[in-house]
Image (cartoon, rainbow, N blue to C red; front, top):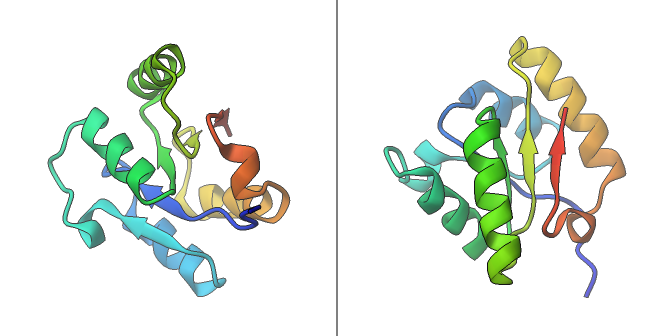
Length: 115
């Protein structure tokens, strides 16, 4: 069954304000704080997002590229990784809204995208 809208899980290096801005527009965005996952390592964060079929949003390109490769090589599925360049919160939210409007959840499966 096709999943239309991405549900985001924000890594703890991403401002919680981004989640609030997206939620105000009707999108699902959960923070590590909301999920009780503060202080978990990157592998645990991706596993948590995956277990809930969420696309992970991070600024941490290097570690999550490595994890995406590990998932691919081991045949595991994740529900997408979005890597945001550090910019003002409102700019990140604006760019995310474009992605959320154009990319389906199913299109993000096993993908890593940069913006």
